[in-house]
Length: 452
Image 1: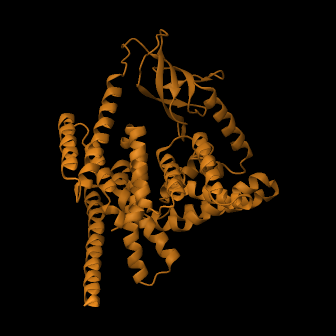
Image 2 (image 1 turned 180 degrees about the vertical axis):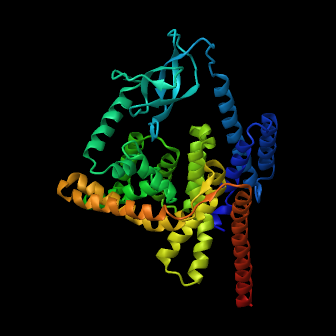
Image 3 (image 1 turned 45 degrees about the horizontal axis):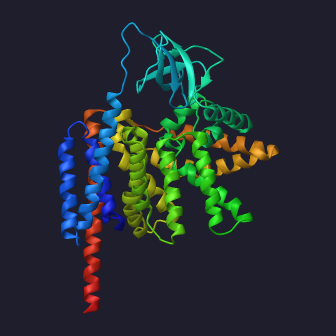
């Protein structure tokens, strides 16, 4: 559907995905043998389709090393004795606000007899009455299920402590809890009812930091930087600010992917080479898998890549059909992107959350532009306090619309619904592919007749 789809790197990324998807079924020795054979074939033939064999061998090697790394980390896990209870736990990610309090995960550092756990990868769930921040070390009770209310909790690094202080300052200076959640990804200041509105209106992805948020912030940085700088200096400044922003809000998979893509795109720009977004997306996939292969199995990682692939591949074909139907370009691109993302992610979202909100396709078209303007306006009002009333008005408008969209029916997972959704998810890309092939064949016939 896209010319970049035929690039060897794309094929290689598919090989990595398939290999890692069958982590517990693939024999590592077989993978190594296949890698060696494909590498030998590349050296032997050197040309034609052998570049594909080279990328396949490299991809298999990356997948193999990633799987070995995951297996080695699993073997390093320390299993406490039954009469031991966890004593100190280091928070892995910022907490999430739930009905029962604040929820997070953490790595066990010590057990009740103060014996230090070496090379431990044991994770445990935590619930707290106060927010928890990445890098924070808390004392726990009840086998590590709930942290004690200890105001003297320490941090594993001064950097994490400074990060918490800076986030606290930003939260105080931000005129709206919604704006703070959109800028930092931290939803602890939002009411549970408002978080549920995002879910029921089919737009929870708006609250999760992603390429959308990076795009909104980057565009504002570039607009301001152009007042004082020109050329590549603008993008250099934007890159530096994005890296700082990534460290500040946390290395979430979707945000990390977006920043990596921006940096890769900037590198190609410096080299004066034009490449497609899909090509940059696949390179970022390789980078993330090499840095932290365990992310491949996280839900946020899978949804992040599938959503963008759906927008670029499926959405581009839907946009072509809408364009032929005389749908305006701006509306057509928004609709096609929303449908493409939903189709690509539904076969993971539906089984996982067991509910699907079709109204999200329409709600995203209305809410996303409002959120963009709200973020820009909110950043301005953070410095110009008298304009705060505009931010409050815009926030109330967004919540009013989401409450309206949340009243539409949704689909609950049943055997019949699951079969229907799966069928639709598979059949639409197949139909679009057939149409693409049909157009390509007709184009070649036209060119042939023209030449004759």
